[in-house]
Image (cartoon, rainbow, N blue to C red):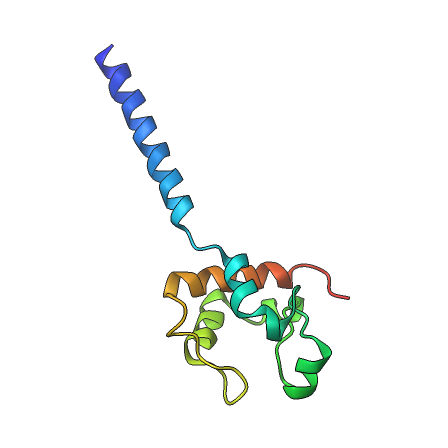
Length: 113
């Protein structure tokens, strides 16, 4: 009986901790919408005006994600890229940048028109 209570307590504590961790995890999609969508588009395909202004702007497609890791996306978010993309190090925390990187890779796996 005592062992069963200990096991039940452990399972409850573990699932509660997992729920808290999931609730605290940054929302990559929301962060992308807030910080990246204007330039890179809703689905990772930059609008025509951005392509004209920044000809080298990244499109988040299969070619993009196969040639980059999450860490390389975080590096660009941290340091920016030349004069075309500003750094987000003062706006996003490292775990938020990683969530954005994972979301960008998710966008890249979807078909683009």
